[in-house]
Length: 404
Image 1 (spheres, rainbow, N blue to C red):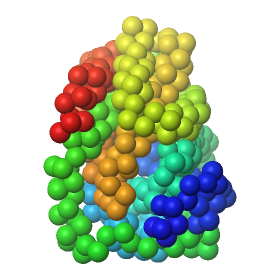
Image 2: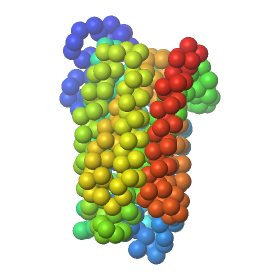
Image 3: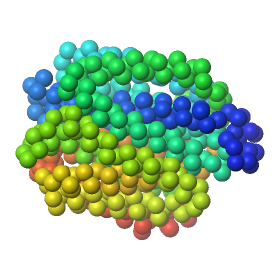
Image 4: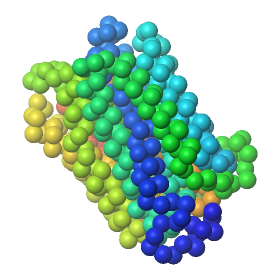
């Protein structure tokens, strides 16, 4: 496997990773990561059904993000030391069970517990991405990762759209039940269609976990990538965790269906993902410029929200700008992280994504408080500050850390 990937110098994908397989992996990554976003458009519905306020219902989104960070730390790195196809299929079955549990939740407390579990197991998406990077020829790695990440982004966007519509016109329980059945079908398909991907590390599970800290210490690029993307992602998650509650207020007076439909505006980010991957392949070490532009776009979107609250035009335009910026920065950060060590891509991805989703969980929690205390403008200014901090870290800390 390693020899085939490493020596493939032609333009075609390696035999183990044909175009149909890449598309399947993109669809799987999208379906899996969608599980952590179904709850965002339905938060207003959940608050009314369980009789709680915005801060209490936000715990559903917060614990989902916390679970994802925990799963990244303890599950996603296993791809380096276990056969990936089997690991992905087993984890997918566990995710289906967690989604079914969420659908049957009799109380908010049970739903929060189920959300934590489905957050942990949704990290199967982050087993798929490094598997694609491992199987791809080196000269096409950015493009392949970009395609799979475009599928992942599609899952994030469509999750909100589908969940918003189903929750409003059918029920939120039906949304989780449909997702559980979809994961069962995907598990069967992946078991048949995915190639085997043998482990690249001889380390035991315990040593694999311990090696994560060593990777974090050894690679300044990894630390910077996690921090910059984490700050951007915190702003991104804070926005989507609170926009449904914002839209229920004047002058909008809209429900979960409209909140979910806003996700379709982020389809522009799907185009940005493979384009950013292609540019990363061409630029090599020049991804920093893309990250700076991405962070700047995210900051500009939130300043737009802050300056024009209550404006549909500002909201719609800002969402497009934000999603393009987030995805451009994400692909560029991932491309340079995967290039650090070919034998440790799952573990490198684990460190990067754990840091990013830890910031995402923090963004959900702090964002909910900021929205409750200071309203939409206060939340927007907080998120703009996060994006500007990421821009500053990349712009002024890049040269020093590249030489570390």
